[in-house]
Image 1 (tube, rainbow, N blue to C red):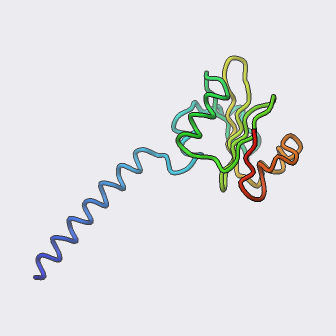
Image 2 (image 1 turned 180 degrees about the horizontal axis):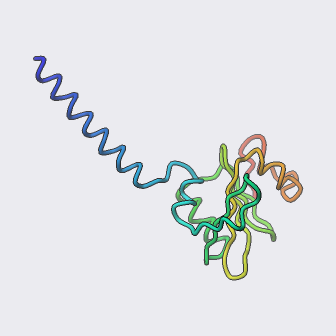
Image 3 (image 1 turned 90 degrees about the vertical axis):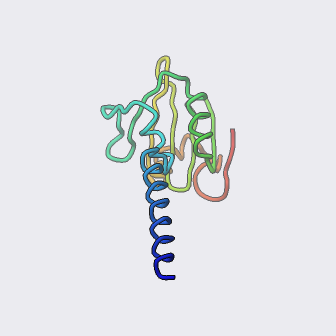
Length: 133
């Protein structure tokens, strides 16, 4: 009976390693890692140490839809300045940039200070679902 237990444990461990390897290779554990894996890094456009910049040749609405399909946001706000996606710990801000999009990813706590004037009372940051737009 002991051999069977070891065999079952070895099989389960192998399956776990395979699943873990696939998850690691996909690299989409958060909106932050999704953006890093799907869009071009633009380090020269970072905002301090808080907001990491990426770019896309697609318009902001299309990029927002792609990100939202992969990671459903808790809140979304759209206005003339861009598309603002709120997640539990991160924010993804998509701003028009010529013919494409500047994508800024940062922690929600710093995004709150940076964009509260733009977002006003939309509820994008802070309590509840806050979806708008």
